[in-house]
Length: 279
Length: 302
Image (cartoon, each protein chain N blue to C red):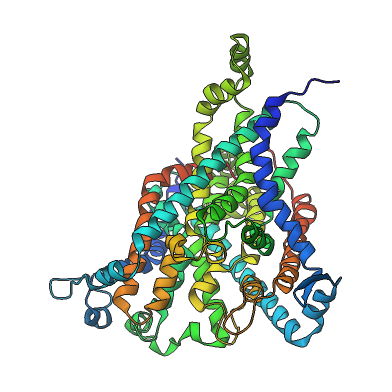
């Protein structure tokens, strides 16, 4: 390797900048987490020290457990996210297969129509979505959220998956046809297993925005029984503003599931972004 | 008559139905509702009257231009701070054989996965004069006099929130630029080295022109994201986007208008009018990008 590109001073500077930024990125999370395990006095007296024997306290978490129904919120978030992802992947892959596999009149037009939603945010249509959900009685049900997230996730899913499906070899599919497999069997048995990595990328891209969304839960499903974790913690924190122990613990509990998901899926996510799936 | 291939229909139908019913139809229905009003509990076609109110009535117009102006500033801060930092971090990360690169990448992306609620409240607490983390840390470096309750003052609240949003999303430009930089072939950089172009000069003269298309994509993603932003402002400052509407952007303005708040009743038709304006702005931005910037950008085949 060339000397000019391996200058030790440059390397030290590079690490210094990256370390500084890493500290900036992680500092707020760190402060919230450590202070959620402290007594109220210690939170204010020494906000930057780790909890020790004297200052350790779980009082905040106790309040959260007693006052907020966080397990229900968590369950709602799980149901909404997993179901939406399931439909995005199933419907998205089916449509992507139709667009990439068959020639039919209106194919390009249909592709453009489905791609329209990539650039236009679904939030613009909120007023009419709310009216529709009220009229159909779906308001304050998890189905309202699932439908909205499925619809808004489909455009990008179809776009990415059809790119990948074009790469699946025609010989394989034709061999299947000669063996008498139906088009459905070819799709589910041959094509879907081959594009599984692309489907995982689509899932990871959609997962985080759905889990974190505040707008639609607030407008479509704000009843106690349908609150998602994001909305639930927003409301809980709003009510307990002055109870710092409870607020910090609620924040930590909201951070935890996302962090777990991120640790599991970060490789997939980063590989998805860097492999140019969103170009 | 050509044979109808039913399986194509079966494959397409679910996606097209859900997408049309829940996304495209409401979108156009919202644009249509902007032309109606409710008079005596009956929905009446009023033409462009809602837009006349929005732009003509000083009460509405002031609020709208305030939100739009704030939204532009919000976007500018992202373009001036988020994207340069993202490019810088990506340029450093993409150096060959940098140690711990994966670790840095993963850590810097952490804020992006957190919800706005967490980010909004966490920063609110940290910047709070009551808790004293921010003043305490400034005190440690002898700059305590610089501290002010940034989120509570008219002049600084919006910029502070924009910077919080930058903090949250810097990972996205970083990742996309990083991917673009990695795809530059080694031979081009080596050819530059032979001509004596190395280090920072190589970045400005070789890499930057090659990643311009990615920077364009990031800019338009930032634009669309910023002009339908809502969550962070709502989580940190509430629906009233305080202090004194200093942090009001189009998303919060639309929410207040159509959903109502405190004593004001919601007005779906004025809400639709604002949504239509947002739609127009986003469409304009996307068109400027697609026809004005993207087609004129020089692309190099690698």
